[in-house]
Length: 433
Image (cartoon, rainbow, N blue to C red; front, side):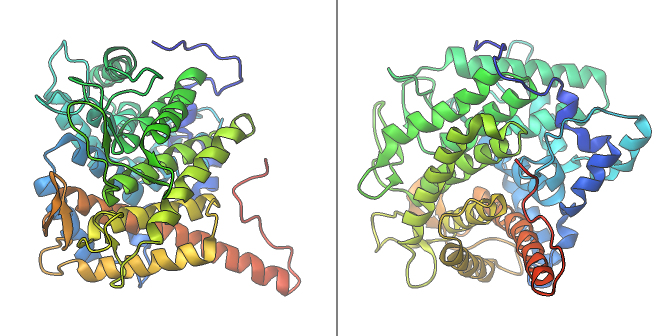
């Protein structure tokens, strides 16, 4: 295991991580964070269609990485104040009273907690991962990690809290000590062989980063960054700045699969948000700079390959491949999150492209069934399907990210008008550094 000691000053308690559940001042600071999909504007997905998207996702989310993405999507849409994209999630205040906790009972993450607890009930006393799936990937169970931490912090049953915490510790140890690595230290996405998948970046580093902050474990936090750096060194095609899908092991997929690139960009952005909102930003400015650059590399290279119909080709190195709604939705959601963080390298053109993709995605949703049409089959990367479980989660991630990005744009617009008309203006960034 990595050492829990640190030479840098960290927040001292897990309670600080969830200060929004108790502290009145934090509640005020969080007022600018939308609390549910009800705050979507008229140009967002209507609640009926969004409800159908969720119904389809709930009905087909069987694989662990889909469940992990599902929990993140539900948190980002329903409880954005409990995600790393909330600039005050790591606010260093201490709990005040049980009365303050009652204030936010309605915002407890029931949807994501339900999913986590369902996976918990499947585990035996000797299991070492959040999910034990025969033939499954070593990295996929970690996709449940962040929601697992939220469930552990919000559930009221002490026995369940203890079981959840024990499994968090076991999952971290499993990843760091029992999964094979490359010679330079990249953790394999598979257990049976050393094999690197771009998907890994969404599954593992965000969990390690959040756990590092929550436990004041500087080494673990930096390990999340290190894994991204190592994976990029192994998977990036230097001529395009895009990532190859699978390397090493008994077989490889060297293609520039669009969904694999979207997984990587989205995962990098979650770690970027964790560091940026950690109240230790000055300590990690080099890592933040790198992560922002690496996410923008993928976004810009991917958007440069958007087809005439406004969507990404399923394989970014094949302009004649079919247009893929799934990867388009996830990569566009990443752009809106980067905008929320103030870290888009080319904001005007990149945001405009993301808006167009989002419009195309909304048009691709069957209003009767809620299925996102025209997606790659997540289990067969050269086949098209109209019923992709993970794509349903991507729709929700996109809608939540667009909503939060839009709030930033509106706030910036108000600040600009105040300055024009002689007002003092407002701080459009979350806080002074």
